[in-house]
Image (cartoon, rainbow over the protein chains, first blue to last red):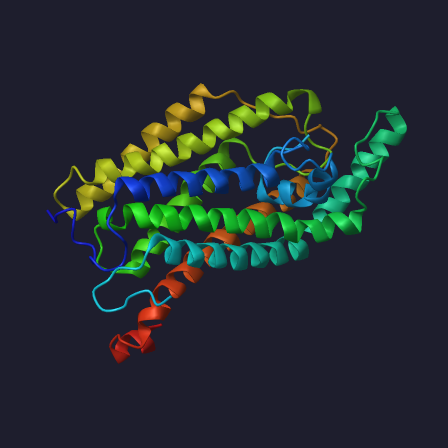
Length: 67
Length: 253
């Protein structure tokens, strides 16, 4: 059985608490961006329904439930 | 920012930048696919929706035309581009945190496995339970319940992939690992499918061939996105290193 550390040691930084905190922040930001595309109806974008309507076709074709 | 300078591993920022770029590229490519194969179906569905709205005098959200149809077709690229970039950022973060736990010496395989896991977990698993619907399908009154169920199935899809990996690693030989992975995956998916409510709001009058050609186009859009994202991210991971690598890596790529 291979050990868990067979991966190349040079391809990623070591996972530290600081990296985890940064990663958490980045994922939150990415999820907010996803929310903006997939679910927002003006609360985040502050554009009324404009962005929501603009991205209407994308939502349908990405498979997100919509109206 | 070269990915590997001697013995120093690339920072999270360098990996994240590659993920975002790969995601933006993949999103725009998926947008092109959706524009070509999906938009004709969306147009056809909207025509049905508006015909229905005129006969029943029901309010249709396409009536008030905040954004024109042409605007929405342009907005398609905005939507898929932003969505792709976000998914690329998440993929790069997952890669950074999980790379050392993926038992492969190949960065390319690691990147492609993660993109494949996402395609399976947050596209295919949700697709079978809640297939995407074109305009004119779906009761606006149930949108909140449908959204919550959709988010739940995304989580279940990811848990199923995780269960497959955990189950696989309990077994010593390759064929037993494969069986364990399938069982682990299916147990979570079947339980999840059984627990979540069934939703079928397709009107009996909606043409089934249009429904399914829309659904295929939608699946194709996500498949293009995740395939392109995985490949582009893997390619960007190795570009910084290619000069230093052996010539066979170049010919293989």
